[in-house]
Image (cartoon, rainbow, N blue to C red; front, top):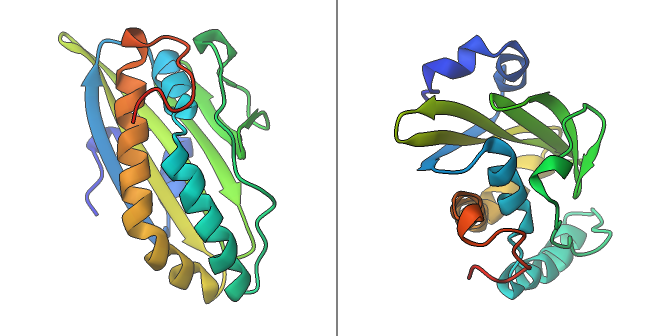
Length: 179
């Protein structure tokens, strides 16, 4: 996978990308700040995503893993976006943050560790955001799990990116507002 050249200029992100088993990047330009974008992404949680987590519950049990519940939407104001490594953002833990430039968080499970990152670029027409998913497998269940959920992951992240870009149109949106 070819990464935008700006990824190599961010040492912490380069380290997360090293030896990754899977990398996906979605890019959008929007007239919102990085913090507004992230707040909008995390607020996106319509009913169909909750349904996918219910299906996931049964699937991970077949693989010998557990799911502790269904993640809820995180309603945060832009100024509340966690920017310190170790802070929580839903079920993610912030690993890297530089306001306006990069934000990354990890979700680690027994079968894989996934990172969700946002890299921002200031352009004359607005801010361009590259949303990157980085996955590192830990055991045989990692690729099995990820290959099954991949089509859904692709859809969910794309919709989260759209919700982040629409933040100013729907500030402090409620879960399910963007379907």
